[in-house]
Length: 478
Image (cartoon, rainbow, N blue to C red):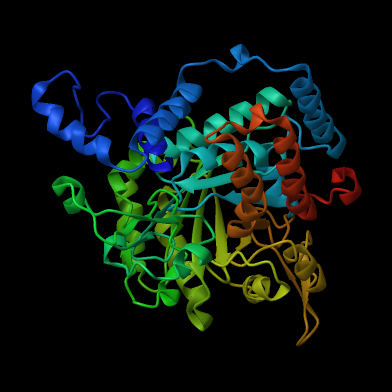
């Protein structure tokens, strides 16, 4: 169901010129297509999945929001959402995400560089826009960007809010964030305990017993096989399924975003920022990508570079990459310090590496200009960890070795040493519980049509965002 919904949404958002030339089109009235239609009809749940996908597509593309009739109870629940936003004092339309970076309370939602489920992405964007995030980072895909912006606009219709920046993520080489899991379910033993399904945090693996295509075509049936597998658009490459497969059937498929397509995407009027994921070890690949983006860079408000901790070579790599960017850089830049990539765990230990990385870089005098932002393992405990290290919303820290004060560098010596925090897996997890419940009860749905669930999701999001924005936690409680 989710795969068909994704495909129909993507198709509805593309002009005829943008659509792939080999897209499958079936004329049900043509005699030559009767065998194909018969095969499709024989597949499990095809009719139901298509009906739900079409319903989802229509709900997004055919009905203006102001024509959706809401019950008095729904209107009252939406009023509760508006009142909560007003009570917590979410940033107004006059403020800028740049102010948050300077103050050190910037919050970015990471939808996932490979996460392409437009249903969840739209609803996540709506919820976290209401919660006051400064930026929403998503896959460099036109349909995904449209889903993010649709969620933002839906949030702005609920309450008067500032629009967060929309960021797209690309890679200069193979990267953990740019891969998908893949396996053939029919190769799996029927009695497998399916640990991959259990461990997947994105619910991106779905398996069910069925008959093989050969058995369907011959009209025979034996003991059956497993059907399904990886729901590609939901998989974001976390890798949790690889080690748990008892038969070693799951493989990783890596990919690189096309530079030309990315350049075209960021010239759209609904993309504000770009993030380049790099290993920091091969700066020649970084240069190749940067040069390939050409003049499209001039359309951006912010350029971020996400890199892991490479030890003593980190600062040297940062300086080299900044020297590559500088001639064409006409906007602000940011360094995303990816402490523990693809984790998103809930414990205090998960965030230690990102905080240690920030301490390491913030204390260096000769680092290149740019805001610093934590990522990788960030969760509800990250702000507390920064406070303990004296790095939360401060313009200087003390070097314990000689009590020397380290101050921030350009774009302004007055901005905070650490500009903010990006939340990915953890942010999706806490709101995802509500979204999964919503879909299990109502199928594919817009969360604003179910205000009770929206209010529940918003409270979860505010509890996280509020740690950086310094909201009173009592205000978000029911």
